[in-house]
Image (cartoon, rainbow, N blue to C red; front, top):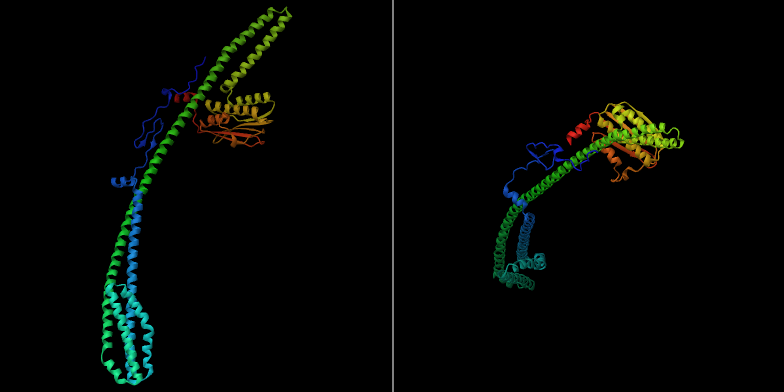
Length: 495
């Protein structure tokens, strides 16, 4: 009996791992050393720690909110100062307008007193129309200045009212013909005193307001400078915090990439180990088949041949008994059938013609046997090729499995098998006109094509499968000339 195939590869037969080169990452169970990850540029320890803090992002948000608040405060101060300045400018223009109108009215009063010409009274009419509006503007500004401004506003209103009343009274006296009384009122100088009082009010109040406006302008400048500094500082801090955050994300991505490479390395190593194990099991299986074929050929073949010789002796002894001769003939026929069955089983287990006749003759015999058994036409175009024993066995098993699939599923009437020697390697193809199938619906549980592909790919070859429902199937395998020999002896050495 042959030795049982081990379920796993003994540790002593696994490929020895070379020590990892300096600057590489060694993964457990790896047969190759992975290249080391690139080192990060040196960053300050404090910055690295800050970038990993949980409140780094809230700090960035708080800085942005603080910057917005500072900007809003500066904006409000600026708007308030501009509003005060605008109202002061309007008050100044209105005050100057009031004084100008009252002065023009007094001048017109004197002109009328001297000439009795009515056109000199037009400034008085203009003052009556425009002074109330201008006085309201000045009063609003003075009222907003506080208690002193309120008192100044009342004095201004009283002075304006008395001045206009005095001018009208003087004009009335002139019209009544009492020019002397009118001159006495003018010479009394009360109008001049009221004008000086108004000028004093305007100068005092407006100068104070101008001082406040100057202070507001200084405040605006300070706010703008503070805002500029705050915005620049917060922008710089935000940029630094954002750079730390981006660096943290980059570190996280690099760590994740490191873990991903580690996992990919482990997967690649496990895949390589499984491929080696599958190759070992395939080689062990073929070895078992060869051993079993030799046992059947030698032991069972010897027993059946000895039985046939004994049957020949018994037939000579029983020559006088027809019944016994008939039974012996039936037994001899069964022995011949057993020998033929043994020969077919031996050839299926390990085609002996591969070792004696080569791949071309073996494939020719295989095609002839399948064509005879299935009753279909198999056209074989086979070139003589030079391949290693392992490559010959792989191509033979490929054609054998493909013809088995044809007999089971294809329901084909014609099959073409070709073996061609090409400049870049050896090409083998099997084509049929059978039912075909959808290659996208291949199930993972169907190992026929997967087994063919593994046999070819372990020798650095390629296998393509082309098929459509109702249009047959085409399998093409290519073994490159640069393929590794992969002989049984080398496989045993690797396992």
